[in-house]
Length: 438
Image (cartoon, rainbow, N blue to C red):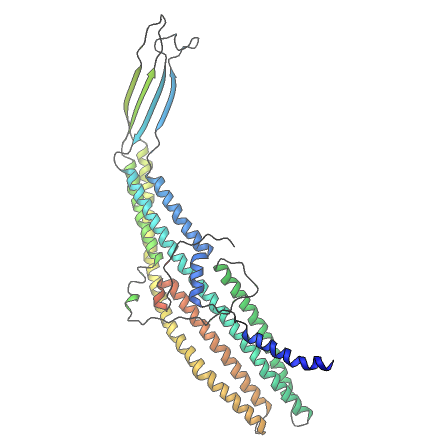
């Protein structure tokens, strides 16, 4: 190496360090930002809103009258002649319309309208279920990343411990089993880091799918998952089970089935059909002028054999309504029971996570530092330091997993209460999801 290049090397290294320090850090994602994206881009949420449009279209179909019938006919035309052979031959234009006198179609339209409301409540339930899934995937990705960082940090500790054990052993002042245990612990930590990295990639792939994206290799850094459970005295908890979207959807389905039953019975009542026609006649046999002719009539549908079919369909709708009522009751009880259990679990997990992070991990790190000091002064052996390092690493992982478990419980609570404020989130009002195809 030339003297000039040797002089330039420190300067170049200094410039490189300055460029790295000045480079902007990757912007970290937070939970609310990700959930807002999921709410508008998740394909299942988009599909649930499409089902609302389908339900609206069924409403139009259910309330529509029968289309009028237009007839174009030739009447009384002799087989061997034309329109001027027989005086009764004529060209006829007719129109026929069935009338809904007793409002059967109006009842059917109102029943279908309840299905639209049920579809909207179902879409809301899907939205919160998918948001809860995204929250859970986010927490898993964040937790796995933190655990991978802890494993890599522990590897640095184990590298130092292996080096110290080897130096002691080679100098004749240490034991071989201490060195081997340190090397085994280092290998296990390396395996942990690889496993945690794979877990993070899997969770990020699930999160990307919920965000309507193709899974990528590199993901943005994630902020710690937020969430704070509202106090039991918060009025927002009142009526959560009864107002849950799944319960409301079941109630609307029940009302729709009862409305359909009423419409079916009404369809068994007589219906009128109006008919009108106009016949055009040409000249007679000897050139005489023949008058055009018109006809009009009213028909009545007599539900002699049809009433039994309509009654059977109405009975079927009544039975389905009773089933929907039972489903609604079961849904309400199940949501209330799970809410009570999850709220108790969330408070216990929040307490455990705080104790692990603020007390247990802090104490273990101090114990590890004390063990190192004792080892360096010769008052303890490497096995004591190894035990302290292993305990510190295990508690760090446990603290991260406790945060992950708390986030998973909060996510499930979001799906059950369908009220973001009760779990410490401020999400934007739901908008029509985008139909973006990545």
